[in-house]
Image 1 (tube, rainbow, N blue to C red):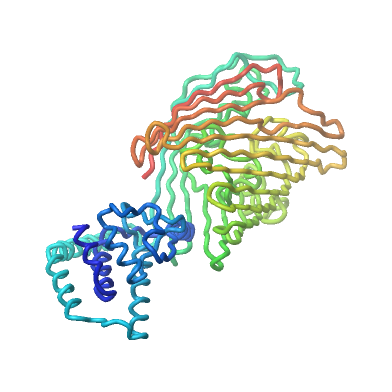
Image 2 (image 1 turned 180 degrees about the horizontal axis):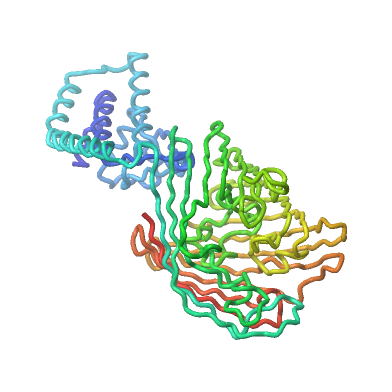
Length: 555
């Protein structure tokens, strides 16, 4: 059928346009993916950009021995209505998309209009009419089959519309089953601690985390997200500094998908937001609860940022600068997010019941009087292979010890998160992130960050904090869809200070290896090992290990 189809292209543009119409009718039934957001639309358009050619020799992947060479030559050189990709390829063996069909049809119609205007061709000849009749006869069986399929699709569509959950809302689910255990000789103690050491007592655990996302769109370019979460995966840290308590004694061993508190599988709504396009170049997102910078802006670590499919550790997911303002309420604006240069600005206020709340009108709460973060990021992406970002966040916290979060929401050593204890704290956070893809299978990335924190109690105390990491991702390793990942870096560490704040005595190094095995489109199994050298930036602490087996179901 395919060869018959292309051999008929040695006719006039009128016949060609009719043939394209027949082809598109079949394609419409086969390919009708719904674009649910602007990012998907832009990505699809970018991957299908085509340019007009004037000679078939301009196609680097078309040879005179190809069975459709003469048909392509006629279409290109006689009618000028075949386009190729910017890299001078035709890709004749891949499926035709609706974008490509539209481009080809438009080119042919333009050619028809040109012939009509210049009267340089006999638009409809007897030969053309005969060809059209032959085309109709040869495709009669296919057209009859297509009509039957369309009728069947219409019936199924009517049934789905009558019984669908909602005309505006989709349910997207995710469930994690995880087996994990931490190993080591003793629990970690903070740098300079004089407390007696205790054994690291940790049992093998089996836990879960479930998320249900209700995603609603009212215009096709907006999205309302309501997320429900439940789980029982408890942090490996235990209670930092308490001898005899089960756990590693450091947040540096936390998994990237533990649920914090409460960890009793109680269901809660932990995220509500609404995103829309203010114009073609501006995207606005309003978070009522659960706002997170790593989701609101590009975090330069796409292979590992997901808690369900990426890194197994908390630190390995992305730079800690994106944890500023976590779980907050506020506004994020992205300018030209699909161009080579993009800008993101955000304001998030604390919205955690353990700290100040943007929804609480009491003193030291509310949208502007409680914990808050002002964030900005400049991203430069000259091509798909390389992109770099510069980020800045100014964060104010009334009490960094409330909720156990601290400057980096529990990522890094306890001293780096809370250098001044419960004192009101201001911090200026600077970050640089890089992502490089030399091929479609290989991704190299990393980040570095520097924070200057000031105690707001007239004591003159301040602390300088530094961190960095490098990542390597190898896609389709062993099988299509699989991912081999390696992460190495230094979590946040106090490197200098004033007013009694001194550098931590040692340096923690974070090493992580994981292998995500894609069992099916909806099931992934990820074994991983996390190794923490000198936990809590204390060279006297023993090395700690965390082994885990994560299974992720998506539906």
